[in-house]
Image 1 (cartoon, rainbow, N blue to C red):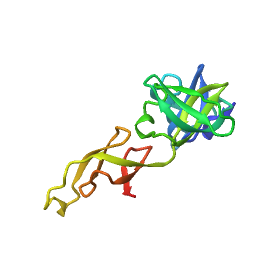
Image 2 (cartoon, rainbow, N blue to C red):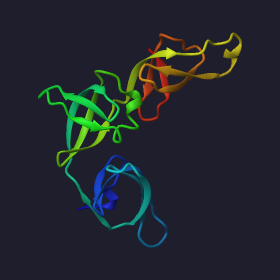
Image 3 (cartoon, rainbow, N blue to C red):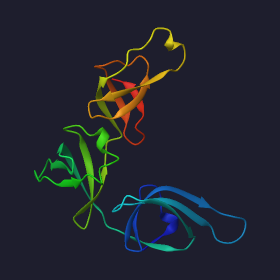
Image 4 (tube, rainbow, N blue to C red):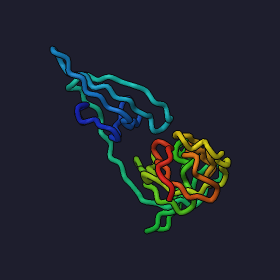
Length: 185
C-alpha cells in the first residue's frame, strides 16, 4: 500500500480492481483540515480517463510492473508486433492499447513495454521521432511574414501542423506525447 501523497504523474496503482496510471496530479491544502489530492488517471485496461479526489492519509494498492525494451516490427490492423532484441521473443500488442502511439510508430522504432503479471498494459514511445513528410501543400510566396502553419502527412500516416517552409521529402522531428512539430532534421 502507498500513501496518496506519493502519487505523481506516471505512477501506476490499483484501485477497486482497476489498474490506473496517473496522468496529472494536484495537491491542495486549505487553511484548515487535511489536504486533498486530485488526480487525473487513465484505466490501463479500458483506456477511460477520469478525475478522482483523495483525502490526505488515504492509501492505494501499489503494483509491481515489469518493463521490456523492444523494437517495432509491423502492425496488421488488430495487433502490433514487436521483437525483444535480447531474447528474440515477439510479443503482440492489441490495437486498443496502441491507439495513441500508433501514428508515430515506424519499423525499427525502439519502445518500452510495461507488463503487469505477464499482461502488456502500456507502451512508452521515445520522447521524439524523426519521420519523413510524404505530402505537403506548396507554400505561397508572401505567406511567410507571420507564423503561418500548414498540415502535412508523414510516412506513418499521421497529420502534423508544421511551419510553411516544410516541403515533401523533408524529415521532421515530432514530440510523441503532444504530436507537435519540433524541428526539421
